[in-house]
Image 1 (cartoon, rainbow, N blue to C red):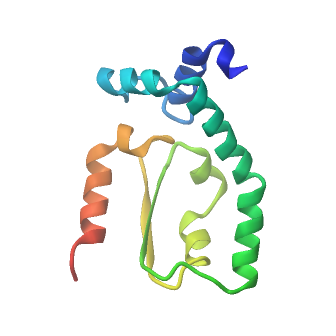
Image 2: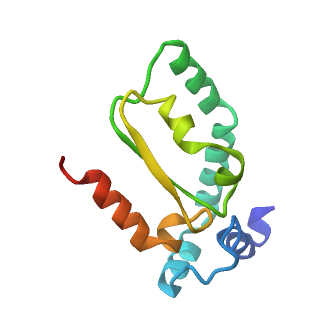
Image 3: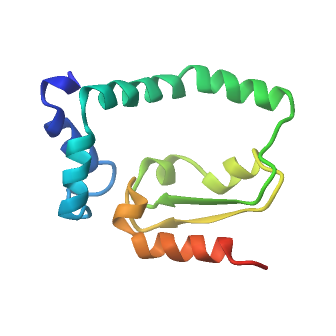
Amino acid sequence: MIGGSPITYLHSKLGGWGTGGLAHLEKEALTAYEAAFTPTVITQICDDYRASAGIDLEHDRASREQGLKIQCDTLVLWGSHGVVHRFFEPLKLWQAQCTGVVDGQALPCGHFLPEEQPDACISALRAFLRPA
């Protein structure tokens, strides 16, 4: 289905997920996304999503059963207009998977944080990576 009209599909995804259109993308970025959206990449994207609903869950369960956790401090950013913000508590979810400090925030955007809120992403990363 995606291959029948790949650019239309790409635009619907890039313009959806809480963003309200393609205005958040610079023309050069959109052109790069379009050029990269080849049949091979489409297959790889579908494989990635398929794995997240299958083998990734199995690996997560196995890690939890073994008591394995992420061993470093973790920064979590998500969009306040997206599904993650509406249905989940990201900081609590990540803290359960980490032994270090989990910090983060919702940014005023949808799914595409770096494209929609580049300055806020940079500020959050700089603060997180700043030596203590």
